[in-house]
Length: 309
Image 1 (cartoon, rainbow, N blue to C red):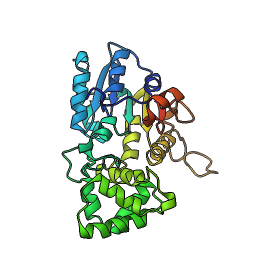
Image 2 (cartoon, rainbow, N blue to C red):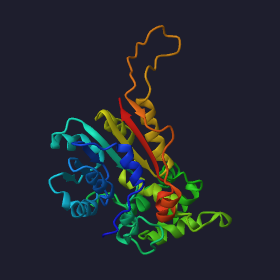
Image 3 (cartoon, rainbow, N blue to C red):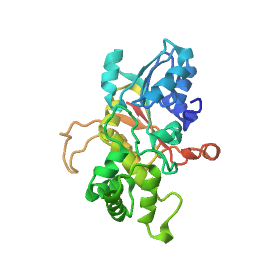
Image 4 (cartoon, rainbow, N blue to C red):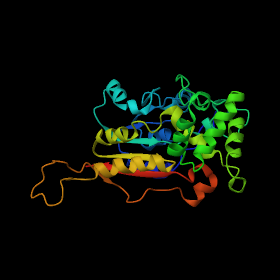
């Protein structure tokens, strides 16, 4: 598992966090600990807290960060539970945090996890936390055609959501759909031949993964809470990989960057709202050409950074 996960936008994240001595940093989605290791290397006095609900990620992070024993702690939990983690650690506020919302290379490449439409015999699982009950197989075989079409459209932005959902429901009446290959075949068959491609199942697989893991549930509230947990001058970095995530993060940043929201024409402010953060860059940071060539999965990454004021 040595190639568990190649950290995306590593240099940009380190610059964005503005790491300093004695700082406390939270890596909310630690994955293979590539970002975390770099944070610990940046200053020998830094303390790091890592969370991930994937047990494999926690195991790999423990191995990789072993040389930094005493300076880090790991928690197997959803990063949205960060308040409980900080309370357990006795941390009142943070110097910085990172949320990398991308699925790890190991998760995609491990056929047993069932995340990729390219692995034909892979089981339909897609759970980031193997302790959870809902699987992709449950979604595909138990959701109604209307429910499937809704998640395909909302979470996958799939134009052919309705015909794909109907085809899946018809097929499962004959035999339960159990593999990634069978699902990909059904998706492809519901798309007009002239519009089919090698990646035509990608959007639906993304939608099912988001549904299984509740990836967008509470995301806005979590990002807002994390930004408010920063010390004055602390930095928050968020990496997104598709437009649904990025819109939510962008909105959270915008709302905390907005002061008075009283209607135009009010002689004095009565809402009392104050600006809480300052975006570090106007536009999201994207991977450079060299990184995109070396790591194709970085092509869709967008990094947003904000500083607490």
